[in-house]
Amino acid sequence: MKNILTCIILLITFFSSAQEIKVLTPTRIELLDLNTTDEKEFNRNKKACEEIRERMSKGLKKEDLTQEEKAELDKMVDPTMMSYWDIEGQGCSWYCGGGSYKETASSHLADQGSINYRAENAMDLNYKNVWVEGVPGYGVGEYLEYSFYQGRPRITEIIVVNGHVKSETAWRNNSRVKKLKMYIKGKPYAILNLTDQRAAQHFKVAPIGKLDKNIDYVTSKSLPPWTMKFEIMEVYPGDKYEDTVLSEIYFDGIDVHCFAKGTLITMADHTQKPIEDVSVGEQILSYHRATDSYIAATIQELASPIHDTLVTISLSDGSTITCTRDHPLLSFSGDWLSYTPEKTQIAYEFDDVKQLKIGSVLQTISGAVNILNIKEINTTQQTYTIVKLDKTNTFIANGILVGTEELRIPRTCDRHKIITE
Image (cartoon, rainbow, N blue to C red):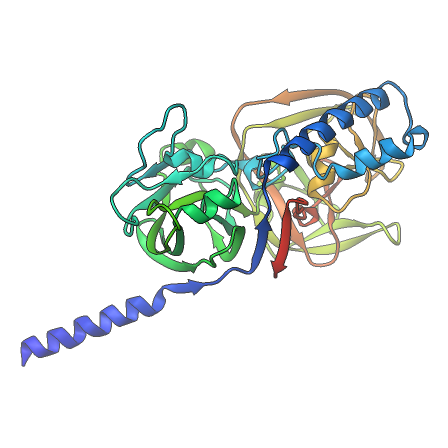
């Protein structure tokens, strides 16, 4: 009787655990049409646009361009893409604040000349390089594992590029994944059901990887990294090869655009508080651009990721502000400015972001202030940001009007055709 009860308890435990594993289907699918003909056109257009931009940097105005030159600029979806095979350009993304520091795999196919099929290929943001499992058969049970440092930005989306997508022939000849079992910190989290399409498949998840706000960067360095594993459960057989291929598993998320510790936030009552001390639910002072007035706005979300590419801006009133390089700051004339305007324009809903430079005039709560110096900082440090407010998308940091992280939007390259959402 005792043995029967034990078996029943074990069965209940097993099924309860199984039910906790989520089954996820893509929330968005972007069909890929990668080919060498388009690669040649990309390279031709990129060279033409670089020549036009060079002339514009020397004083040529956009309205003086020929119709052909304007058409060339319109063709270029993302001017920060260095290669046709890049998944993302150099614009702002979740990777501004980090990414995995190590990728490993249970196996990989042996190198073929100068071409390799190792784990790191699945996280290099390049469509052409791939991970291929290296065991006989379809590789069921083989896996990729990503290791993350504590404090990196949180993940809210997992994107899987299934199969060898560099060409239609390569995609059909090699096997693709049908189901991936996903683990977080060694524990089953979800099963990703992949469609058999040459595409980037997006899976939405609740924020993964949040670091305790009370743990500073120095402490976080001594903490063990956390892992995310993707195990092959089922496959779609290839026409020619059993080898199962994944071109990429990459991520998107939040907590990207931030300020250094000690940045003073103006509260609704006009007092100031260090950004690391503000809390969700508190009211801060926000500028309402449509009415040209200051109002109280409630903080709905905060974040504190680690960054290693910041700028310190020295101002004519003797103050400074340190932020990520693509964070938009409001000029006295009402324009958005950024140290890397092309990146900001790609990442935010702005049609025209101007260059932040020495001599620029920023809008402050008391009027205007000139930029005297801009210094790049490459030292890794913990940063902080207000992600979301209930009414507006601006707040006041060290007296300067700045934007929240909610300004960030995704962009889709013309090589992708979105078929579901």
